[in-house]
Structure formats: structure tokens, C-alpha cells
Amino acid sequence: METQKILKLSSISKKIVVALLGGFLLFFLLFHMVANLCILRNDGGEWYRAFCHFMTNPFIKVMEIVLMAALLFHIILTVSLWIYNKTHARPINYKHASKTKTATGSKLMMWTGIVIFLFLGLHFCNFYFAKFDLVPGTYLIETENLSKELNELQNNMTPQMENTMANLQVIASEFRSEEDFDAFLNKSNPSADEMDVINFLKFQKVLDNAQGNVEQGGKYITNLSREDKKVIKNILPKLHVEPDFFYMARDLFKNVLYLVIYLLCFVALWFHMRHAFESAFQTLGLNNYKYNKAIIIASQIYASLICLGFAIVPIAVFFF
Image 1 (cartoon, helix red, strand yellow):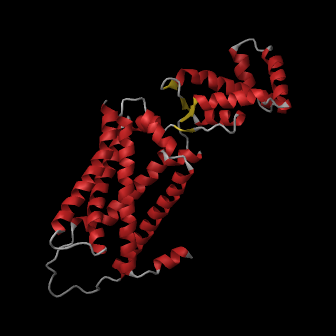
Image 2 (cartoon, one colour):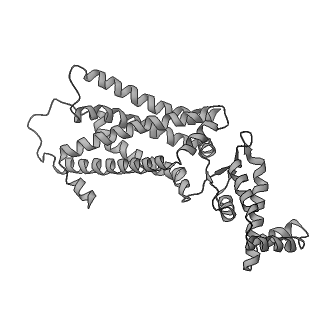
Image 3 (cartoon, one colour):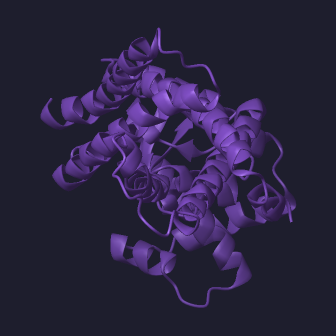
């Protein structure tokens, strides 16, 4: 219903809303670019991981919803305006051709927008959806939080956990080789008691393997897989396990195909931003013949700053 009301706005009203939403998204891109530059710091990802952790607080989660809503409405209104312009175009050409020329950026807005939309889908699949466990990712935990949860587990041992530990000692005594151990972990149709032991053994195995992935002076345990995350959360459900976007970004930027796609998409974004910046001033009535040239130059500088800021990160990671 709300979407229908929005679509019934006048053409001018839609353009104003699109301009305001576009301005908000332009500002967000600057914020996102500055955050991405932290990947280039020679600190093992400390700044970037700290930024990603900051993005998990409740206020930022609310802002994420606002951002997604702004992006969605921007797309809906832009497509609505494009359809309106196509369906209400003059059916018969003018007798004399117009001497004014439509800017190249204006002609490309819909097509560059489609490229950006497709790239956002790829970007969300590679990063954002990992937050909700919708796609596989690489995860990390803070060793301090892990120690606290393990101590709490040990100090508040439930009867079920005590029973599991007793069963573990009995079952472990039967292992004669690594093959016996793996066979038990992958046993089909285990009993409830055996399942508890299997979960605990998998948990212990993940922790043993993770000892070699401690980074930043022991602050983080990294390179945890999606399956590792499930195993850990099964034993310690309150432990915070979050995506390791630093590792995921660097891993993706080492892929030459992804690098090329990434850079080409930011070429499209440059054309989109360059025209959007300028047209927003016009739509909001903030342009003037005295400083139109300054607005054009500012749009080129801002678009170039944002796109180069984003592009330099994958280039540096790929080559260095």
C-alpha cells in the first residue's frame, strides 16, 4: 500500500525524493570508502575488524534498515520515473530538431543503475548475507569472549553436560586410531547421548585447529568456516561469532575475475554519481548559471574521489 502511494506521487515530487535519497546514498559511499581504506593499513586488519565490529551495535543496525529502505525507494522511484518518461514521451517528433543536447550521463543513468544494482547483488552475496548465515563466509571470534564463555560453561556445568563428559571418557577409551575417531564423528543414527559427545568432540576439534589461526597478539581466532561456526554455537550459543570481512575482502580481491568486475562496476558508478550529483542540484533548485560550472567540476571531483578510493583497495591487495 505504501509503495502504491509513493508511485502515485507527481513526477516533480518523485524527482525531489530521488534527489534527496541519492544525496544520502552519496554520503554513505564516502563513509564506506573511508572504512574500506582501513584494509590497506599494515596492522593485520585491526582497524578494519574494529570498524566491522562497531557496525554490529544496535544503532548501526537501525541505520542499516534506513539505508536499505533509502536504496529500495531510490530504485523504485527511479524506475517509475523512467517508465513515466517513456510512456509520456512526445509521440511525434518536433518539426525542427532541438538544439539542446541531452547529457551523456543522463542517457546512461538507467543502464549504469542496472550495472550497479547487479553488482550490489553480487556484493551482498559475497559479504552482507554472511552476517545472516544465508551464504558461506569466513568467521572470527574474540579469544577473550571465548575464554569467558568456556569459564562460564565449566562453572555452570549442567547434569546433561556432566553426563556427556562421563560418556566421553568411556567412548574415548575405545578409540584405537584416528580412523576410529573420525568414524565415530561421522556415525550414522547416533543415540542422543552419543550425539552430545559427537558435538563436544567436534567443538574440541575446531578449537584445536583454531589455535593456529590466532591473530593480533591473540585477540582473534580467525579463518573459521561456516561449519565451524555452527559447531561452536551448538556448545556456546551465547558466544558472538561474526564474519571476518577483512579476510573475506582480501581473499576476494586476490581473484582476478572479481577484481576486473569490481573495477568495471566502479567505472559505471563514476558516470552514475557524476550525473546524479549535478542533477540533484538542478532538481532541488540549487543550481545557478553563475556557479553551474563549479557544480559540474565538484561532481567530477567527488565521483573521482569515491571511485578511486574504492578502486585502490582491491588493486593494492591484488598486487601487493
